[in-house]
Length: 298
Image 1: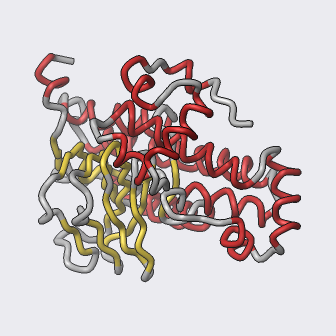
Image 2: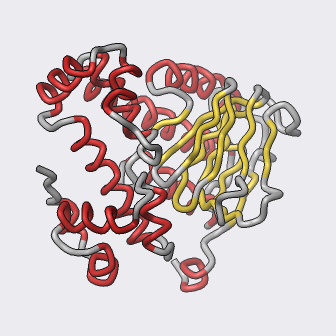
Image 3: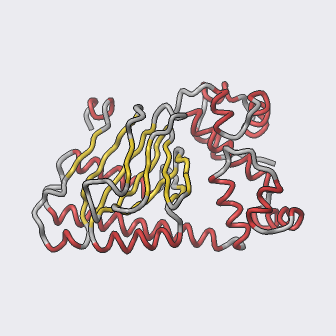
C-alpha cells in the first residue's frame, strides 16, 4: 500500500455497474467504503434511498453514531456493527453529541444476502459487537482494499467476494451463538445488556429486572456461570472500552470516563489503576497490547 493510502484511507466505491451476469442475483457488491464523518448532515433514511433491494453491513472504527431501527435507538461505538435492508424503516446518522463517526461498510445485493441478513437478525440482532481483529472485519477490510485497488474487475469476482463475506457472517454468528449457548438464557441476556449499555448508570437492580430474576438469585447465578460478579463484569467491559478510547482516540480522559459510565473522573482513575496497574494517563503514554490482554479484575 502506498504512503498516500495510509495517510488518506477513506473512499467510497460503487461497482454495481458491472455487467448483469447470473451470479449478480445470488450475491454481489454494490458499494464498499471507509468514511470519517464529522458534519451533522450525515443522515440516511432507509425509506428515502435511491438504491433498493440492497443490504448494508456497517462497522464502527472510532467515534460514534446512531441507528434507529424498530423504534429503538442504538448508540454505535467502536467495535459495533449493524445490518439493515434497503428499503426498510430505519435511519442512521451522526448525532449532535458525537464529534465524528469513522466506519467501514459494505452494501450487497442478491438473494443469498437477504437470507443471511434474516439469519443474522434472528441469531444476533440488528446490532452486535465484533472484535476488530476478527476474521469478519479483516475480510471486510481486504474487500475494501481490493475494490480500491481495482482488483474487482467483473461480476464473477464481485459475486465471489460478496459470497465469501456472507459465509464469514454465518461462521461468525455460529461461533458467537455457541459461546452464548454455554450460558443460561438469563445470564447470556445479562451479558449482552452489560456490553451494550455500559455507558449508562446501571445498578444490580437494573440488571436483575432486565433478565427477570430476583436480585440475589441473579447475583448467585451470574457468579456461578461467569465466575465474577455482575458489577465486576461491568467494570471489565468498561475497562475494555476505556482501553479502546485511550489507544485509538485523542479524547480527554475526563470524557473517556463519561463515555465508559463514570460521572466522577477521579473514581474512573481509581478503578482504572486498580484494574490495569497504572493510571489512565500512564497507560495512554506507554500502552502495550500485552498489558491489556492479561488484565485481571478481582
